[in-house]
Image: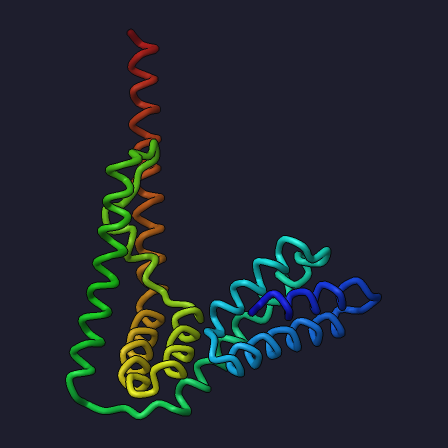
Length: 207
C-alpha cells in the first residue's frame, strides 16, 4: 500500500526542485499514503512504514527527505498532540489506574531491559544500574499509534488516548531531569573508573 506513494515521490525527486518544492512533494506523498490506506481500510502506520522503506532504499534524495523530517519533527509532534487533544474525552474512572499501571510497567521495562543487557553483553565501560530511567521519554510515534488505533477501534479510542496522553505528559515532564541525572552518574562512574586505572598504573610503575 505504501509502494505507490513512494514511487510517486521517487519520480518527482528526479526533476529539478528547490527545498520548498521538495517539502511539498514529501508532504503530498505522506498525505496520499494516509488517504490511500484509509480508503482501503489499511493501517496508515504500516503503509507509511513501507513508503519510508522504499524511499530510503531507492530515492536519490533520501538524505534530504530525512533532513526535512528531522527538522519538522517537533512541529509534527505538536500537530499530533493538538489533533489528539481535540478528540480527547477525559473520564475519571478505572482508565486512570490503567494509565498509572502503563507508566510504571513501561518504566520498569526500561530499567530491567538495560540491567539485563549489561549483564548479558558485559560492556567494558561503567553503566549506572538505573540508566533505563533516562530513556522513558515518549516521542510522536506513541501518539501516532494511538491515533491510528482510534480509527481502527473507535470504542477503545477514549481509553487509549487517556492512557497515552497522561503517560506522555508525565514522561515528558520528568524525563529531562532523569536524563541529566543518569548522564551525571555515567560521567561520575567513568571518572571513578579512569582514576582507579590511573592509580593502578602508578602503583605498577613503582613496583
